[in-house]
Image (tube, rainbow, N blue to C red; front, side, top):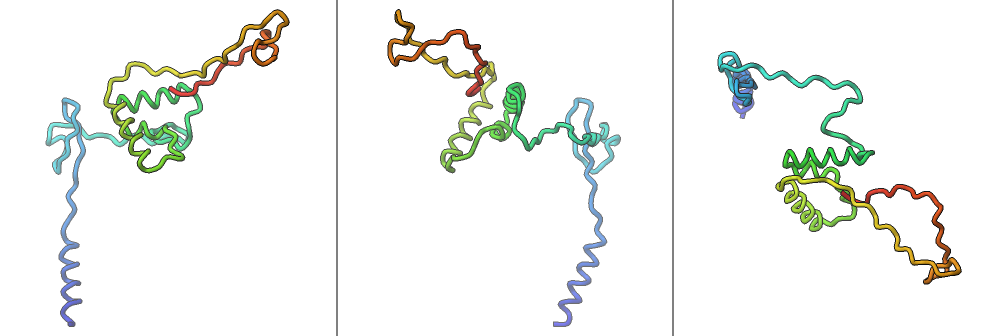
Length: 161
């Protein structure tokens, strides 16, 4: 029984002597990423630099807030489709209230969307209300409400893309 702790201790010392191999990430002349244990120069490539640190508030791929403008949503959709990344596209989907089965169906549809070429992204606006023609008294024919035509129209907000 005394030999067992001694055996573990010597095994740990022996394993500590092994050195970890360094894996170099390089870019070759064709722009492909090459991995190897040799230096990049020995493989005929150059070292890939780490991405520059972003300043505070700089935009990266991850954003923990919703897009505030329609142009931001369009850009997110376009980049997800260009990358053929259904997970990125799912990041802008409103998932609340969906069951697991419904979420699976939505993910299947999003995957089908990113696999097809993107033709256009256009906002879908709500339909204008149907106005009934006024009779001679100025009242609408159906409900007795007056039709007011001098009010400024507010721009409609899009319902979907």
